[in-house]
Image (cartoon, rainbow, N blue to C red; front, side):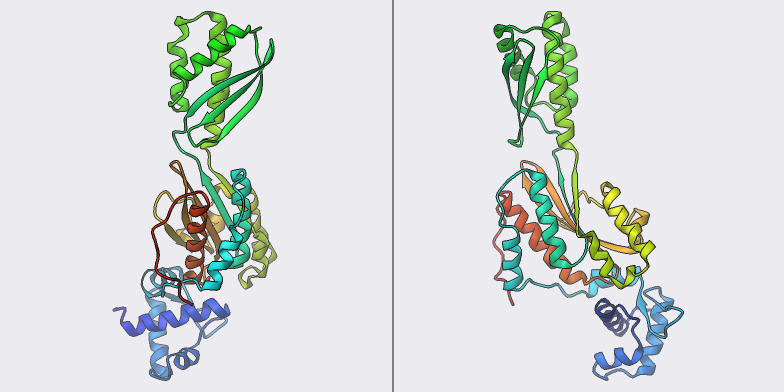
Length: 347
């Protein structure tokens, strides 16, 4: 059976009407929105074909039709009109992102709340650390003979420090030697290489120096591995309760619980500026009846992040995609990444 242009036009009307009403769409409504150019009888035949082809579904209690995940996918790929943000929307995004550069988790937390309030769906923001993050410099600040503060600057210019209780008494000269060893042998290499380097040096130094070096290297490895893990912050999970699809309390609580407790399982695509996952395309069972739209942003220093929205499969994909793109570009600017010039925003 051929998917004709008329069938595509009818599918587009069904998707967009269902997005705005959350109610099954009937042939009379479609005929009216198509300006009377196609009769209701013809539309009913086309709707039956679209159901048979898997693009639409017919709820048992209604004569109207609703889109299937396959129908949404065709709509997103071929039929959806790309939207541009209005000047007012652009200004609102820019105002939401007017924040000082503070701790990364605080920045993305504020961004997540702004995204959720802007699109009226639950949102999540992720910062993905460099896979091969390295230390660029070490310093040890002596507190007393058995305690020092380890200061480590990482390749992305973040600085980590911690008070370290040493297992042996350390003289001032030994402290300077330890700093020299750290900066000579343990900078500009990833965490897994640090442990190998330490083992190679075991026979080249005294047992006392090796023990002290092992303590500081172990701290450095822990910091780099922790910094390389992704951090995901969710916001606006209570937006779920406003959606007709989640009037069932158990269904709503299941999704809200997933967003609170299993957020590490939210989609984090490896490539592409924008990813749209519709219904069963989501791997997590809790997201099978939802759609997820994710946009990528640039943190700099080979780090990137993602800003995503979780909503019903009838979400307004064009509007959500445009707004997420605006937020992603704003976050890239916030982190200092220059973007190529764009055409003037149209109202």
